[in-house]
Every structure is written in C-alpha cells, then in structure tokens.
Length: 319
Length: 185
Image (cartoon, rainbow over all chains, first blue to last red; front, side, top):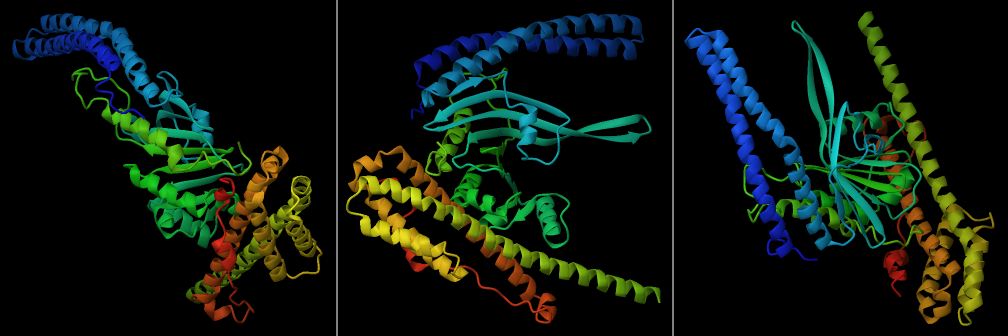
C-alpha cells in the first residue's frame, strides 16, 4: 500500500495549482474582513467620538457593504476550491491506497440510517453529513462519512426562549457488511457514568427498555464498554472472545472511545473526532508537508478496520 | 407507628423484588439451557445431509461416517440425559472435525458446492453453540452470585435454591483446531 503522497508528482501538481487559488481566495477574504472591520470602526469613531452619527453610519455601511461583497463573492470560488481539494487531492490519495476507494464530498450517511444504527440514544434535532467514502476490501463492502449530530435544549429566560445546541456525535461513522448473519441487534457503548449506572439499574432493579444488558466474560471489555442486546445468545455469537479482543485493540488505536452497533447484518462504528477531516486550509499553505498526513492516517485507519476486525473471514455461511 | 409501617413496607418491597429477581435468574438459566438444546438439534439435523454428500465421494471414511451416524442416532433418541447428550455432542463434533480435516484427500468433495455449504453451516453451528454455552454460563454465574452473596445467601437455602455448575469445555475440545483452520486445507 503506497503511503508517500508528498513525493507524488500528480498530487504536487494539483497542490501547486490549488495553492494559487488559495492565495487569491485568502487575499479577497482578508480584504473583505478588513473592510467590514474598518466600516465598524469608522461608524463607532464618528458616532461616539466626533458626535456625527449620520455620517458615521453611512460611511460604516458603505465600507462594510464593500467588505461583505468581497466575502460573498468568494463563496462560489471557495466552494470550488474545497471541492477540488477533496476530489483531486484526497480522491487521488484514496485511489493510491486502494482502487475501490472513492470520495463524494457532498454525500454522507442519511439521518434515518444514523438513527436506525442505534449507536446513540438521542435523536438529532440538527444533522449534517459530508465526505462519503466508499470502498471494498476483498469480500467486505464498507463506507464511512463525517457526521455532526446535535440536539437542542430550550430554556425560558426573561428575554424569551434561549436555545442551546449540544453535540450527540461529531466524527466519522464507519459501516461495513458483517461476516455473520443475525436477526436482532447488539449495541456496544463506552462505559461512561451514564451507561454504567443505566446498566446497573436495568440489571438490579428494573429495565424500562426491551434491551438486555449483556455481561461478557472479557474483564477488560466489560471495563471499557456496556453491551446491550435483544438476544443474549446472538450477542455472544457476534461478540466472540476473539472479536472482543479485536474491538479492544481498535478502541486503543482510536483517540476517543468508540461505539459499535450490529444491526441488519451490518456493523456500525462511531469514531468521535475533534477536527473536521478532508478540509482545505485557506489562511495557511497547501504545500505544508504535514497537511494531508492526518487525513491519510484517518483513511488508512478506516481501511484497516476490516482487517483489524477480521471481517473478510467468511466461513459462517455469509458470502 | 408510621415509621414502623414504612419499614414493614420497605422490607416487603425488598422481599418481593429479591424473590422475583431469583425466579427471573433461575428462569434465565432454564431458558439458556434450552437455547443450547435448540442449537444442538439444529446441528444434529445437519448430519444426514453431510453423511450423504461425503459418502458419494469417499471410499475410506466409512468407519467415521458410521460412527457419526450412530452418535447422532443416540443423541436424538430421546432416552439420553442432558449430560450424556453433551458428551455425545462433543464426540460427534470431534468426529466431524476429523472428517473435515481429511477432506483434503478428496479434491472432488472439496469442490462440491453442497459440501461447502454444509461445511460453513456446520462451522456456523459451532459458533452458535459456543455462544449458547457462554450465555448459559453467564446465566449460571448471575444466579450463583445472587444466591451466594449477601443478602441472598440468607434466604436461598430456605427457598431450596442451590449453586449450579457452569459448563466446562472438554479437554478434547480445547485442543481442537479452530474453525478457520478447517478451511485452510
């Protein structure tokens, strides 16, 4: 699997061309922001220091409008620049890693699929997804995409209703065809305080859901995760001792704790991330040797999940 | 008076919750055991087809096939205890695994689609039985914890609830080749 993209002539040529576009966009955006800032400053100075608010407002509006025009005008170029980076640079790297890999920047995982995966208990009020990557390793088809799902809380204040947005999930959801058939579903969530207390309550007092807590034999796995399922036997059929070890290894490799669900003969893994992947910079150079390293590492990590979880072993009647 | 009533109420609620919990755990054990039984039956049902397919291609495995048929007949006769059934299944499993390892000597059989399907169904049934056994053992552990730990240990004896044994893997099974190895011939 080739990994040296920095020495790749095609990538270098594309980056050099995009760097020219980036500089133009950065210059126009900088001018736009400066003009908006100058407009605000002029407005304030004439209104509050010289006491000529009418002149201050007019001069401020003119300057800010010109600045706003510059920013608005950059919009389509910026979008084309970002798209070109994803398709021509990231897309090329994907093909170099494996011919089956392909990125569609404006597509993602549908909200209903995200909800049906049962990875999270809260339904999103705001949902965005992008950068769908699809591929196939031997017999196993997979895809992953960036997702940002949020829910809102509304509180009444004396100034009206205050709406706050909270993250349900921000990161990458990875989906692959699982190598065993199953009918019910099994969910593996990180053992945080909420999940651990919920599991204890369901097991020792009473359960308000139809899901059972699945207690597994692997002590490290039990320390890291809480497992829920509709069918005790099927959950163990999926989470064999070897599979639990593989999930633990995968979890250690991920910076933040992962969640998994097994549903409709598919495997879903949620990898939380604290950054936006595959985005072209505007105010820093594209020619930085470390620029695409992090994105490439993310892609390689996702590609290796199939191998890590041994999903290509197809000996259980599912081909 | 009110405090006394509250205490009696709490003791009553605790008693009912504890008793129901024990019943639930014991039922889970029964249920988990019946799941093993269902999986075993599914596996026993595969035997006639497997024997039929293998018979067409092999000349030298007759004694193994006869043994497999006999073991299956015994296991499904209905006159065997659960322990005997488990032992027969272990023997059956070892014999079939041995047979599948020998498939390398019969290229035509190895290429037969029916046989390949049966082979993967057999491997799948092994995995399902293993899962059912682990579920049974988890239920037993849960039940034993409930009756052996305080306060369960105070009442379990009075209710005739005694610890149960978990299923142990037979020594022969521990030494068996993995399911994956069977396909790497």
